[in-house]
Amino acid sequence: MKKIITSAALLLFCTFVNAQENYTIKMNMKIEGLPPEMAGFGDQETVTYIKGDKTKTEISSMMGTQTMLFDGKTHYFLSDAMGTKTGYSATAEEMEAASKKDKPEAKPKIEYTAEKKTIAGYECTKAIVTSEGKDKKENKIIVWVTDKIKSDLAKSKKGDRGMMDLGDIKGYPLEMEMKQSQQGMDMKIVISATDVNTNAVDDGVFAVNTEGYKMSSYKDYAEKMKAMKGGQH
Image (cartoon, rainbow, N blue to C red; front, side, top):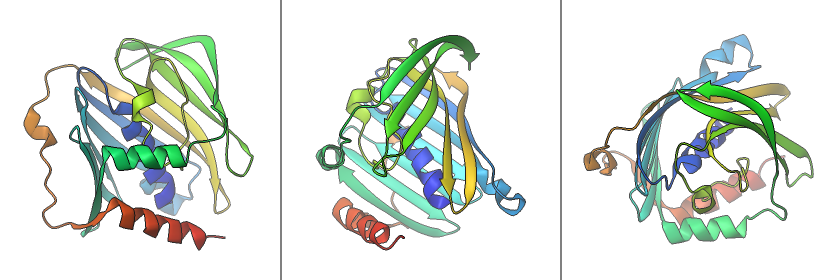
């Protein structure tokens, strides 16, 4: 469950890196298909602040809070899970190297449709992104994109490659819908923007505060994740 929410959060974060203007974007994520006792964990609120190549995403849910920040040189990932505070930092070069190492063999296929709808005041076009996972299974994600928000997705594909790749999609995603199956549960994840504000973002928003967090290097974090994946069956 935590893996699903984290992957979706990372997808949001990597989507927003490298926008060229000032934006404050609020989004909601909902996971359908969870059992009643876990339904509350499927709701998540996200606020992303963007200024040039700087970005900060704050995520809150019943599981706790996460902060993902890029100050133009270094990436910071902070997690507060019910008082347990952990995090790691990584240089842009480290994230780029990780991205190249896990680069998929084939780019996702993108099908643009004629369907349109307005999301947070922006007209969006529906696109279907199809990719093949390491298990050779076909994965599809429905993406609603707008050409009115400037971003560079090609430069932003860094970090956790366990999330879905949007390939060379044209436009800025304001809504994404994907299906996942895990632990016998068939789920649908919907991430949608609720508000887009273009007012200037104060530089202080991107100040890094790791006080109280047990920080590690990206190398240590990557080795820990590799060990955890190796133990999964």
